[in-house]
Length: 367
Image (tube, rainbow, N blue to C red; front, top):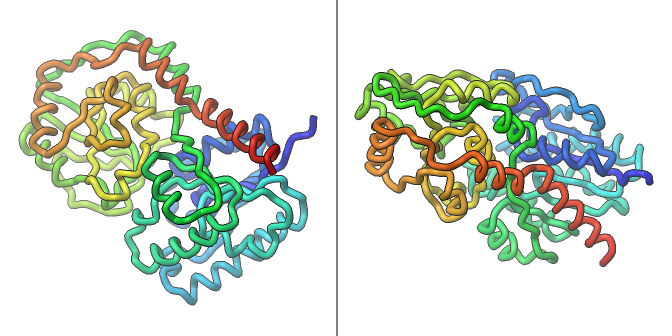
């Protein structure tokens, strides 16, 4: 049977830190023929080298640097530039589905939609955009996209509620984030967890982007309170912080190296400020952290309470320091391997792709 075709427009670089769009495209390629267009990143220090997918056609889209897009003039020029690039693919082939990971793709593709079923994968809330000009443009474009999209996926129940309130024409499907099967398989092959109760040096690890939502003051307080503690940070730094003894920025690592790298650390950290943006996030890193079989300290909020069997939650900086103190004294793993593997298998990217495929098939039957 001939595969249905998806034109997959991705607003992050293929060689950026692997996120939801990368994983879903890879999993969906088992059932769909995918042509993937991605925005080429100009900050090369933010990038690594991700392997090219065997069964996906990928092509970079050139664009005006993001620091200029906040101005409406450059935004219009950028829309025209992207439209010329997308036009080639949209007119070259008949796609059954048009998958958009950002509303900023809407205007470039709008003149060439044809009969493609339009899918919007809503990863984040627009309130997460710091720049007021860009946020306003995003919200306007998203409103238009929600008016014409036939299928909308969201990553959290908070986002589902937010999207429903925007008066869209269809109910959004909650398809949370997940974890790759390769990370779960490494759990099975890894040697049994050893209690690492090292009072002299206790090493925390954070994996992910460092931006305004990263609670640097809480981390600094933790390191100051317990000088034997340190934090290494792996990922791009969008908001630089002052150099601080015990806090080390290591840059971007290839995704496949993370499980082995994490074994060098005593515990994993997710120190977020509780903004409206964070409250709507289902963090990929929590799924991956669990697979590393390390204790996890994370800021508690409602959307991630379901991770409670596997995560040590804190609510204030004082609470963070207190729970860190407990780990330094006794770092016995909170969860067992079998329970964690079952949880992760039920929340894998493969399972997410099955949910998406069923939703698309249902939509086509009802159309």
